[in-house]
Image 1: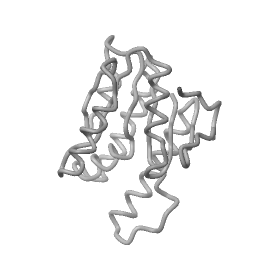
Image 2: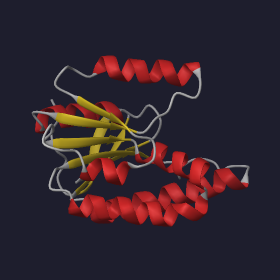
Image 3: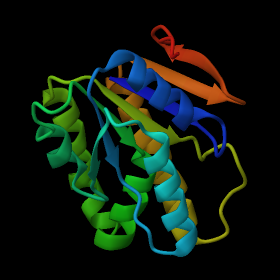
Length: 175
């Protein structure tokens, strides 16, 4: 498992996608974003266009543990884009109380899968303290999720200004 962290527009998604295309012949793009507005719908369309025909896509905003375990023979590796969006989806749809159970399910799925998984997540704890309780809860939960993912990952990469830096393990080379 490879965890790719970074801030907004850091280059983490491009790095992770290039890495998946380098490592996997038939990558699965596990997309967690939902198009709740036209701007997000445009982003999703742009991401779809950026992927080539060899990609399989599974759009799953919350049940990612099941999607990881049921990836099937159609792929040889998974790119989860992104864990932070998944966290937001779960918190908003199911409430913070459901989050611990959902996190346990995801961590179990990551340990059980036989396929390599690349996970993209936002590093949100380096900015200002959010002004609302929900914002602070989200920032805290994102930090704890990243810590749990990093503890399980074989490699953790932080991308800043498009430059990947190894935090754990060796930085894989992406074409």
